[in-house]
Image 1 (cartoon, rainbow, N blue to C red):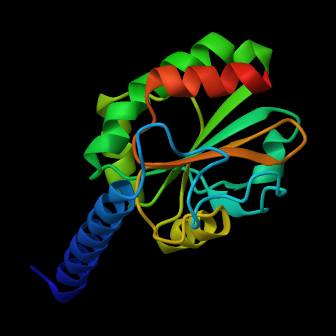
Image 2 (image 1 turned 60 degrees about the horizontal axis):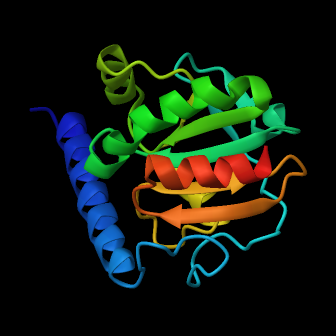
Length: 184
């Protein structure tokens, strides 16, 4: 294994362990019902305007989050190596299909390598945009309230661009559906 590949593997391993540990510790402080307005410090500030950011998609095309202004935007930070992330994605695909015509837009922010995301999407089709950020995506996540950098992490932004819900950890289909319906 060459030095560059070894460094990449080491970086990915350290990032995975740190995210998993952070998520575990954060989840210990949360009850299953928490994640919205009663969320602990470290999650999105409810009612605050969503931060702007710019990240590339899988083809390297840059996208501004403002492209989805006027929609109910569900921003989900995830990675291919994160089991809870992979578990919640089929529900997100289903909800995007169900509510897309009513102004819902899921947006996946992958904290991962583009090659890993492409391989993942070859197996699990996703019907919403995925942006890639690696370290840049971690910084975006922090600006959206995920100070711990744990995954998965989801923020709902209303049509006025205000953060109205955040959840650290896996978001169930039922909880996502309930939150989404309240803002459509």
